[in-house]
Image (tube, rainbow, N blue to C red; front, side, top):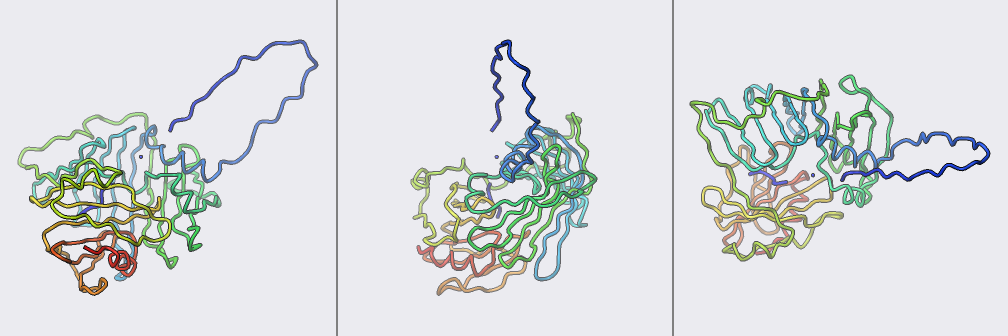
Length: 347
């Protein structure tokens, strides 16, 4: 089960009239440093114009330790991506290719190509609603640093409600590409980190790197087919054979963002996405009254119902059944907070 989840400046010039006048002392060139707002906006669109190739390491911290993933990333601006997994061993050889419309995930161990709609760019891109982020977080410029051999500017994003550091990013001073990113839990502890180990800015990359094809001996398996996301929940209500239930409680700063209707294995599932600009959670609802299969599930109380929870790739999943519905919440927040949200979803 996956979460489903991106302006240009213009210059104007004016004609200058030539008049006979005393020479004026020229004004000094502006040396003002960019603000956090300027940098966030530039970073959110940098990958639309900057092509690069490099290697990233991602670390997700959990109660049992940490899980690391190493990926070779090739990006041809504005929309072509290739991500080849180097580590861990059970992911070695996995390949993801996308043109930001269709995504192919190649799994050589099972000779399968999973076809999905584009969801979101890799972890180091900033696909942000900048206005929403700045409504809920303050942005503070920190000291410069060196990341992967490039000069970077640090931005810390602190919640205006809790005063807790939520995220820190290191933005390339020249290209504005995000070179490193850390996220933090509500108690201030680090929850994940992704950074470039190496990066090289390029003008062009071979076209065959981004070829969406199916090699001989592999078969295509369609993934979850979600319809176009809509801002108006009423637009999908008529296509669902059950009443869609929205949470009555969401954490401070969060608001409804979009909804979509998907089908997997013939089961219709609604996804409601809520975000505060940096963090997000989704509510999935279907009429199966069936809990998802999890690797290491443990029981967890949601109001007066017993559900199950697990940690998946840095996200918390909480699922339970109520009045013929299966309701599953997925988000980058603790199970206790998801349970509080879940208690307000009353079929």
